[in-house]
Image (cartoon, rainbow over all chains, first blue to last red; front, side):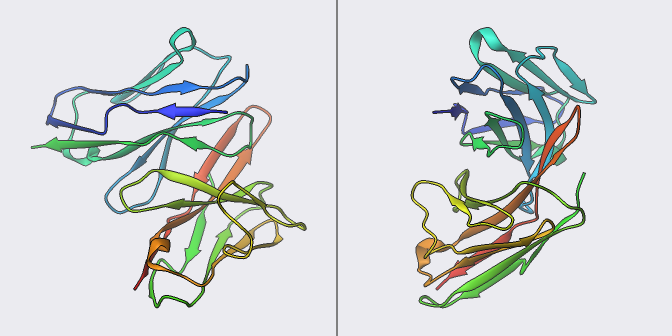
Length: 114
Length: 116
């Protein structure tokens, strides 16, 4: 069975600080997909990134970056120079096949204070 | 990406009644799912909505409580039957967009249900 753990339930930072969200996963499959979603206070779930298990390249998109390490089954997410608009709940999720259902972590609430 | 709409966006219902939630996508998709997010919690998959056949339910969810229809590749409904306050949640549909080199999964805006 697959499992996703986000050990940090809530992180509070001051604007312009960097914040790293941890995600650790468990799966028996050799091919799988990892996701990050953002859920702002309005409630919608915003897709941020999808990573394939066979592609361990780290990725940067603006102030967002992701560090995928198969050796430690981790897929961590860093927000650089955080802004108040980054305040949201962030979910890490795992899919064991393309097009398959997602298993979500418990989510990490990020609060960025001005 | 896909444009996904859900109706209603929110509702307040009396216990014992039923509510049907609609999910409409602007393109044909093979895979559609229904998730539940209880207050302050993460998302849990209710079922996979299969076009032309019965939905596939996850452990803890049954068809009598959450009947699902999927009449075509752009539309699905989820009914929450005989509601109780414990059914108060956000219900979200999601779709998979899959190409030769890509695979993305997007979510609708959600239906916020309160049962009194």
